[in-house]
Length: 604
Ligand code: ADP
Image (cartoon, rainbow, N blue to C red):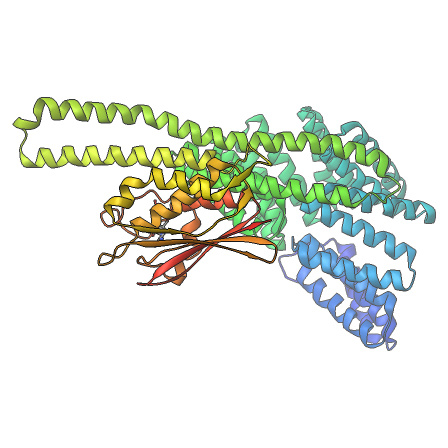
């Protein structure tokens, strides 16, 4: 145990006693039980140490084929990983425990595993699946009348109902859980029931009642020296103070939570606290600091697969960057935010559909459908919001740009002859920059609006789209003496305008990135492969280095300076967006100095 970890005297006594018993015992199965018991009493205060004891227990249990012990150890390993925010590892361990328990028909154990798995899916934000596991667990526990477990299930179901927006049902389950916990005098759990009940009041906007519950929770956990609980309560209190605009109190409680979480190695807790501390800074208008905290939170969250938190961090980053006028980053995080939202939505939808077999299906499904409909609405809004955002940026920037270019024009008209060479040079820089800005804005708008197939189900003959592209690009094709070879192309399900845009961007690039000593030759071909349309656009240009093959599809990525090749770095990102929207793929194969071939694969 680390010297910094605090334990109550009683716990310390227990640990010494257990260690003594482990040293003395000769029976291996008893050793497994004792090691797990020791790990159980340590896992909240000294997780690493607990993990080593329970891993030892697991190894012995496997050696002596003691299945109950394998199940219990795996479950405990899952619990420790869970507490540290290692959700994937926790899920694997819980699954392992469930498999063993099912094999030996250990109903109490199975119920616990269901509960644990429900908690994992809850953290992933897959609420339908999570509710299903919790309800299955509750049914089994009720049959066995294990009060501690019944209370746990009720508590967890309350948590899911909170997420599903049914506050009354959530409060009912929390009340039932709290009553049982008081009856069994399960103090740590009472603390959690307090904080979970507080959460519902917070959501309902009754912050005073919420704080009362949170402080009750803090008091209980402090009396028990339960570090996880103390950090949890402090974090919640900090969040309410943040909402109430009391920044000083908010920072005090959030920092306290963060310090404890750091000591415990509680990644999930840390990520949440950092995000909240960032939010306080945003409220204070300290955007640079806020961004720093969000990034620290993001670094942890990205590795955890916790979509709801990820979504919140991306949104906070997008807003914070917008405040600092860094529109490029704001835009990038807005894209990530809407993608995270979409991922969450799709995952839940799939899960909801896959669960028709459950007997609780009827009520739950109706609720799910209602919620998914509203989620879809939110998703649509997020997408609209993103487009509006890009549109607004482009629109807002156009006005000052117009001023710049028209006053630049006036300056030239009235004073050009009286200017010295330096002045003329400056003026030409201003003019060039405004032309460039114009290009950036129109490409950005094009990116924002592309890919949304409003003509779903429409059949488009790609040969026709290329006629339009050839006409649109006729000047540049002529100037560069480009040879365009178009092989026979198919008719596919896609919008005509998106396809024009896709080919136009790719062909324009093939012309632009030509070699100095050779006229461009561009060949467009088609094959059908594995039930996919594969379209290729091949050029004999300068080529792309291997290391850049993926990044060129990211928005604003350019490999050359502007004096060599003009451009905005948005064209290929737009292509990718269009193709992705059609559930297809785009990639490039290339050899430096010889040329590149862009491939597009679309489902048939
Ligand atoms: P832009 O053309 O405006 O710079 P794009 O997003 O269309 O932006 O392309 C991104 C980068 O990918 C380009 O700057 C260029 O370096 C590289 N690239 C794209 N197409 C080709 C090509 N056909 N040959 C060589 N390089 C290319």
